[in-house]
Length: 136
Image (cartoon, rainbow, N blue to C red):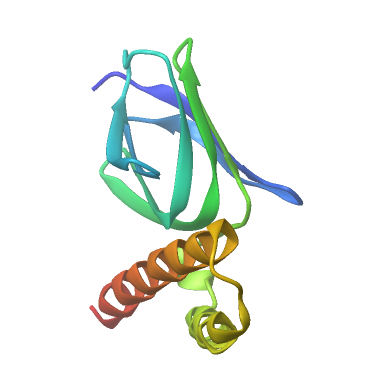
């Protein structure tokens, strides 16, 4: 299967770099898969799981949002935060969700509140996915 270069980066570290066959991304407008030869794209990422497939191996990374760009047979993922799924702090995510929900009643109605509710929804979806994934 044709391959392309993936670089998964967070602000303080290079999390993954290597030749891969497929990457599934949590795009802001929905999940998407990238294969070699994909049309050039730039997309915003929501908090979610990046799945990397190469040589029959399936690796998963948790990203907390960011941007992905694919061009010239190279995918670059600039994540706000990223960790291998087995290293991610699920309990910390749950605590963050709980704290954000406690703070909702103190926020004024408007765009900031709307963004916070959307972020909490993304975090809850991610938490549910991680709870199911790590239980298997």
